[in-house]
Amino acid sequence: MRVVSLLPAATEIVASIGGAGLLVGVSHECDFPPQVSALPRVTSTRLDRRLASGEIDAQMALAKLTGQSTVDVDVATLARLRTDVLIGQSLCDVCAVSGPELERVVTSLQPTPWVVTLHPHTLAEALVDIWRVGEVIGFPDEAEEVVAGLRYRLRRLRALASRPTRPRVVVLEWLDPPYVAGHWVPELVALAGGEDVANAAGGPSVARSWRELAGLAPDLVVVALCGFDVARARQELAQVVDEDARALLARRVEFLDGNAYTSRPGPRLVDAAERLARLMRG
Image 1 (spheres, rainbow, N blue to C red):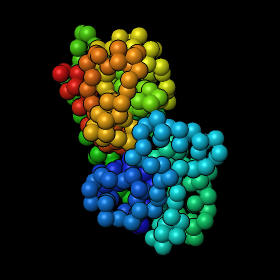
Image 2 (image 1 turned 180 degrees about the horizontal axis):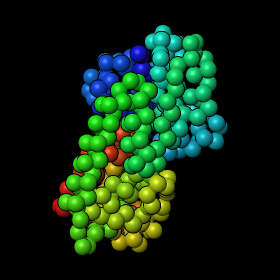
Image 3 (image 1 turned 90 degrees about the vertical axis):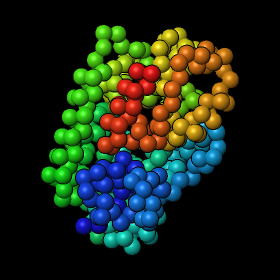
Image 4 (image 1 turned 90 degrees about the horizontal axis):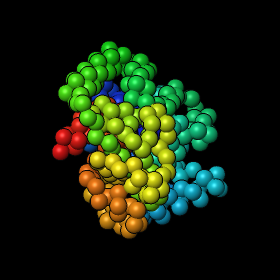
């Protein structure tokens, strides 16, 4: 079986259940586990990651206004790879091909590959996706074992993180404009022993003003930028000059690698919860 992954989370899922050897192509964003770096890249992005986050946001807004995708698919390479299973997503059109573009790509391939579309909004749905991928690529038992192990770690974390007073937490996934992380992130905060006071579990990430966020008076602000590591997050944070932002950021601020741990609905979400617990303990 020949598998192509169009998003980092799917690549991590396939590798975690023992199917790395089936991968014949990955997206431009896939970087974990490290060995996937040697595989052909079947997508590229029109976004310049070197730009400041405000400029990237403006590029995204323009793309949505004009109906253009920010991710291009190398259909010729995809066809050459003779793909049996194509794993895509329909959650976010920033970092991976989705929606109508994914459908267009699939219909252009002959023979047509089996398509697995991931669309998780919660931690439970992300775990179900691991099982779904395992079923499709022929690793059902391995997927069950991985999910069981992740659930055990979550139960253990929940027990260890139980406390009478839960710190109030804000998780920022973007800074210009400020966005608070949604989907599974509020769940991770709760599992780690905190209370996400800026967003609700299962809902989308949302833009909130710096004044609103400062008014929440959190005990901890976690900067976990979507698609960026800690070094880049520190650079972005240093550029924030808004007065209300400075009031918020005068509180305790910690960093988490959003690109690796909170942005990808795969096995490392559990790592994210464990790291959040350590940040809350100080």
